Each structure stands twice: as C-alpha cells, then as structure tokens.
Length: 189
Image 1 (cartoon, rainbow, N blue to C red):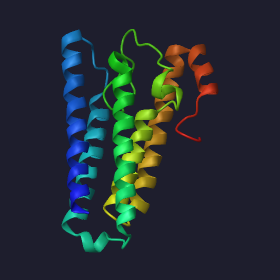
Image 2: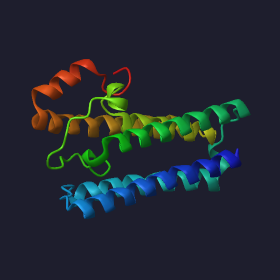
Image 3: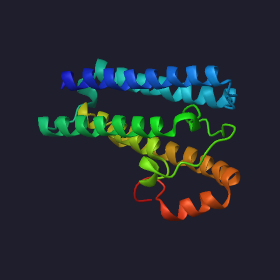
Image 4: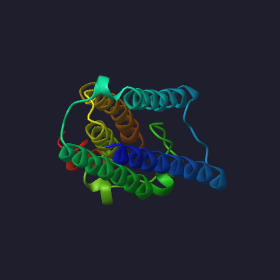
C-alpha cells in the first residue's frame, strides 16, 4: 500500500508543479494578463492546502481512516488515480494557450473554443480527471474519507464548472451553446 501511496503522491505533485510553472512561464513570455482575482487564487490555494491536510492526516493516522479492503482495491485505486492524472494532464495540455490558471474561470484574450480531443468526451475533462484521481487516491489509501472527500469535491467541481459555463456561454455565444447540446457536462451528466 505504501509503495502506491508514495508513488501516487510523487506523480500527483510532480504533475501539478509542472503545470503550474509551465503556466506561469507562458503568461510571462506571452505577456498575457492573468484575470484571476486574488480571492479565486486564495480559494484554490485553500483547496490545495486542505487536500494536503487530509492527505497528511491519512498518512499519520492510517488506522483511524482505514477500510480493510484487499490488495485488489488498492491496485484498482492506483489505476483510477493514474487514469485521472493522465486524463486531466492531457486535457490541460490540449488547451495550450487557452488555459487559464486552475479554476480561475476567466477568459484569456483571443481564447479559442476547444471542442476536440478530451473536450469531445466531456466539457470539463480536467475536472473529470481530478475527480478520478481523488477517488482513486482515496480507494488506494483504503480510507473511509472517500465517502466525505469525493462527494464534497464533486459538489465544488459542479459549482465551479457551472460558473465557468456561464462565462464561456457569454464569450462564445451560439457556438458554445451548440457544443453544450452535443457533449456531456462531466461524464453522464
């Protein structure tokens, strides 16, 4: 279990830091104005710190949160986690210059509507991948927090994605409305 846990943490934070620094370099090189408000940045910093706190509690006190699932569940959780990391990273990289910092819900000048690749599968593939890797992680560490963290994460994702959809609808107009009719919100919703 600890092998998958440590490997998962390294993969997760390695990808997160890579994407964070890649975005900062892009914004600086292209002289793009980052329209995220300070409050949104603080909110997402709070989400990241909250996730780290939950992770640390599970690592420091594993017996409190442990569900005695077998190794098959741990392996399944790792596969789900890995799928989520790969899918959300692919989705983020697919956006290229159209990506605004995580959950910012802003529009970058001259943004294009991306409707192919992972965006042909669902309208919010980064969020879908994020749900999969948190779900996989909680299964991997055999934690009953799975039943608390994942529903809370899904609720937050839906709220943020709905706000982003309003903004995208205003910016892109009819092409975005047509896209909404053809492609699901997350997966089945």
